[in-house]
Every structure is written in structure tokens, then in C-alpha cells.
Length: 201
Length: 251
Image 1 (cartoon, rainbow over the protein chains, first blue to last red):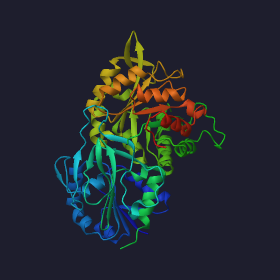
Image 2 (image 1 turned 90 degrees about the vertical axis):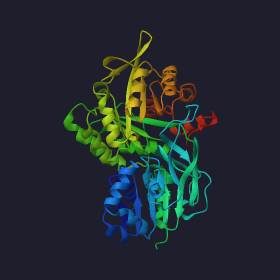
Image 3 (image 1 turned 30 degrees about the vertical axis):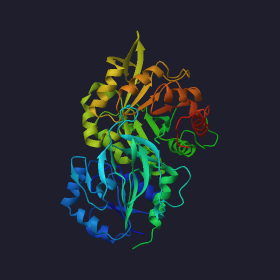
Image 4 (image 1 turned 120 degrees about the vertical axis):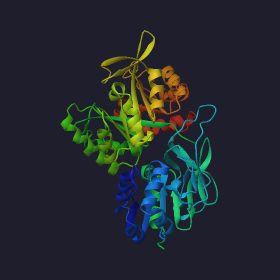
């Protein structure tokens, strides 16, 4: 199986490569549209800032490539946010695969809940979907983020922090996860395994 | 709900864990990767590797170790000890560390925090504060606690948050090694004052100490070393206890 990891100077890419290697698959980090389009799976990983990431994608025409891919596609963390319509992070127009808006967490008035949202939090309101089938009972994933996607069409799991937000998205061949499956122990590994097992298109 | 984190800390010298470690199930208790995997399997939420290697040329060993850990461990980990420049941070993050922890260099050059946060993002910059109470005032110490400063711990923590630190690792030198419990007042004072998470460290001796630091101490995470290494407290057993006591943990 050929897996392309979209290269756009995002952080934390190495961890995703290692997580895939633990599952016995090699992935290639690339910004070459041909390689991305001919892969069996595409992963859009990342940590970073929305506007500079979008600028990097546009310069290389990768925004168009991402909109056109037909094979199973997985956005992770910033990758999820960039698949949404708009991000409050430096007022950025994103790719618009999902109708969700990306907003900044506003710390609760009590000061109990801090921003960024860092640590292990649970998946809730899971919808029947091949990406999230047969998960272990303890559904905790590791999060590190200051911006979140609102709930809406395509939300197949939510997480609660200050309020409910989108944990996992699905539409057509696009899936996206706000948490870091590559750092989320057994549950994260199962999600990646499920992604690799999706029928090819 | 967001859970409280339990973080074992491994001291590393020349690529090996040091301080006594008592694990019969490990063939080689000095191997940090084996120990990291074991803690991860027991339910540790994150790991911290603190490099106490003295010489610069042996630092390459640390990068090799980080690569090995990143390849084999499925939970986030932080690397600290002697980090003083953007290059140091770049090398460790590129090798697969999720976060880095800096201490003395931040006190010497506070602007370094701003630079690191801008370059790599706040989420991967942990700043460690070693705090000791002197005449009723909590002051910052550096160089493994050997060098005193005139910085008040509370003010310094605020400045670090303003400069873009993502988390504070707060060690009470007064409590460290005593097994009498975490510095609850100091932790609570700093944690309630800050918009960023606080990891409490120093003094863990029993399970109730963890409960106290998450409730009274308002800590977001708790770090300990020897009680885990010597199996005085098992991580899964600790988490079951905390859950029974109403502390939300990942079980």
C-alpha cells in the first residue's frame, strides 16, 4: 500500500511516520501532486499555524490537489482545521471540504479550563462509521490545540472541553481527527488501522 | 472530560536511565526505551526524559535515544536537560520529541522562550521552574538547584506564560525527595494564576499525595520518579484509586 503524507512544513510529521511504521506500512512525505494523487491513502498531518500552512499549500497548488483526491484522505489536528471552511486563526480561508468553522477556545470564566486544551480527553456521541468501529472501551485521545472545529454536518464524534466541539469528521472520501492518533496509545493505533483498512476508491 | 495526567520522569545519563530502578520484568532496567514502553503499557499519560549528561559530545546519544523512543512509544514525551538554543530544540523535535523542557537557559535568556514559541509553537515548549522557599519567599533556582536567583517563582511563572511557554513544570525543591507530598499551596497559587497548564513535581510518596495535588493543588498533571521506579506505587493502581476518589483520569 502506498501512503502519501502531505508535506507542508507542519510539525510532528515524524511521529505520524513512526506510527505508520509500527503498523507495518511505509509512508512517503511529499508535496509532489502526482505522488499524492497516485497514492492509495493520503494523510494530511500537522501542527502549526493556519494562514502560513494555507499559503504554503496554495503556492504549490496543493489546495486544488487536496480538493480533487479520490482515495481515502485523513486530516490530523491542523489537517482537520484546514479541511474546514474558515479559521479564526489569522482570519484564514481554508479548503472548504467540511462546512465547519474553526474558532479559538475562550477560557471559561471560572479559569478552571485553560487554553490550549492539552491532554487526554474522551470521544463522545460516536456515529456508526468505519473509521471508528471496534474501538477499545476507554475512548481517550491525546489533544494539543487552541482552535477547534464547530459541530455540524459530518461530525461523527465530539469531545467536551469548555463546550462540545468536533473530534472526528467524515464526508465522502475525507476523514479528519482533531486529536493525535499517532500519540493516542491503543485507541489511536486502532483508528489508524481502521483508516488503512478502508476500501480503496 | 479532560483528564488529569500522570507523568513518570526518567533521568538519563549517556543514553541510559540512572537512579535506581527496580523492575524484575525488565531484562535491562537501564534501558530507557524498555522502561518507557512498560510505563506506557501501565497507563502513563506522558513521559519526561531528563538528560543529566554532562558533556556536550555525548549529547548526540540523547538524539539517538529520542529517535528510539519516538519509534516505539505511542504516548507523548518531553525531553529536557541542558537545552540552550534553537538548534538544540530543533534537533530533539526533528528526532521525534513532542515537547522540550528548558530551565536554566530560560532564566539566563528569557527572550529564548519567545523565540522558541514563535519558531516551534507554544504547545511544545515546557518551561521548568525549580522553586525553593527562602524566608517565606518562593524563589527560582537553576543548574539543577545549585544556583539561586532573585526571581520570585510566581512572577516568573507569569512571565513565562506571557512569553509563550505552553506548560510549566513546577518542582518544589523543598518537597523533592521527602515523600511527604507535593507543595500544595505553591502549586495552587501558581496554577490558579496561570492561563496554561501546570505539572506539579517533587514530594510524591503515596497515592493520596496525587489526589491532593489535583484537588487542593489545582495541578493539571503530576510528575514523579522514584516511587514509580521502585514500584512503591503502580501507575494503573494509582489511576484506579484516583478514579474512585473522583479525580478524572484516563483508565
